[in-house]
Image (cartoon, rainbow, N blue to C red):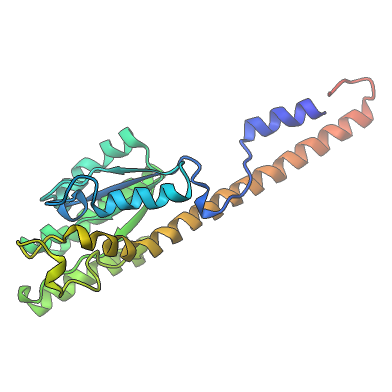
Length: 243
């Protein structure tokens, strides 16, 4: 009986419930533009690098993959996402795109459609998307900037996503945190950027743990039913060896 139970456990892959910090080889992929690619920063000082270090301080099982490209727009991310998912097989995808689209005046509908396509492709490959909201300077007009900002919350509601605030939330109006171009944050600002998305990421990690636990519980119930059935078989056939 013990041998049978061991085989069943292996087949169903039952694992105990862990905290959000268990890691369990969790891969997080970041799809973004220059704000996530570390433009103008010393190597290894961007918020994505800080993210990996913060996670690995809790568990060495976490891995962060950064496929961000400076100048990237949502259409470029849409074209790249499927191959990136196939190559890296992430568990979570942080989508931090749209700022360049807005700065270039792309239509709200095209930005929305590209982001939605990225989100749906992530879901197709069983990766949980985390969407980061973007904002534009007020000189792009009240109507456009409002519609641009609102498209992220609309998409998050429609696709039931965690929505993280704008990376530069809380310091966007403070010049001391920006490089000479006035657009890209300095190394000193990267911790603030990480802090902005951190609560939403923790929510995603916890949600995945709950889902994993639910699946494991269901499988455990199945195992109990199977083992009980074999106990009955043993009672009816005492000469049968199930050890």
